[in-house]
Length: 125
Image (cartoon, rainbow, N blue to C red; front, side, top):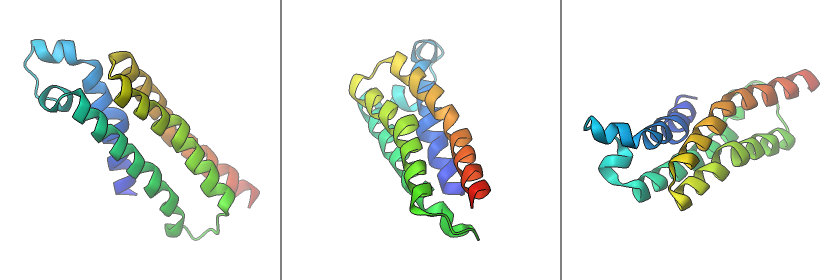
């Protein structure tokens, strides 16, 4: 669970937020990933950490006493693909601050989406 939150926080929140604030961060000489490593490398970090987030989410049911079906895994993967991977890849390709803000916004809904999915499957199961 800690790894899942850790990688989501880096790829979906921290790096995109820093990316979105690069103008101000340059002015104050901040040492952020997009400024220190460049947007190309930051984009790779975003995609890799978000891919790890989605992958780890597929193994989280192993820690649960519930027997969640393959439909749960499909719903979880779909939420990750839509809310994390799609905007993360767009950011890595386009490298625009607007894309960083879009990723941050979408990624902010990911934990809620996961909670809704698990609640639905617990209620139905």
